[in-house]
Every structure is written in C-alpha cells, then in structure tokens.
Image (cartoon, rainbow, N blue to C red; front, side, top):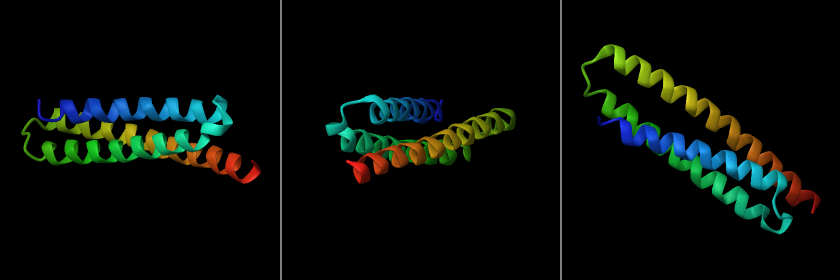
Length: 98
C-alpha cells in the first residue's frame, strides 16, 4: 500500500501535463506562460512522486510487485519527460514568436 498513493499522484501529474500541453497548443495565447508553469509544476510533482515510489519499494519484499511497480513508474516517467520537453518547446515558440 505504501506505493499506491505516490503512484496515483504520478499518474495524476502526467494527466495534468497532458492538459498543460493541450492548453499550450490550443489555449489563449495570453495564457501560454500559465500552461508552461502548470507543466513544470506537474513535472516536478511527477518526479517527486516517483522518488516516493522508489524509496517505498525498498521496504517491500514482494519482488514481483516491486518489479512491476518499478517498470510502471519508469514508463510514466518516460512519458512525463517527453511531455515536459514538448510543453517547453510549444511555450518557447509562442514566447519567441509572440
């Protein structure tokens, strides 16, 4: 149970990052910085949540569970790493061309 809440937090942060990207791409151009900030904050939350998952996995003896949770956490971190780069790109283009 120790990993479930930070893992859910990680997933919610990824979802927020998806929304931030959508806002950056299609939202009000005057709010582009808000989309960028929300993406950065959610990315920080995702990384923090993942750290909590990893530290809690060290105390769990179920190797099968730990392996699966570790893989799932890394998979979502890969997604959030890609998302933050895309958010940063969209925001930078908008700010530099605006």
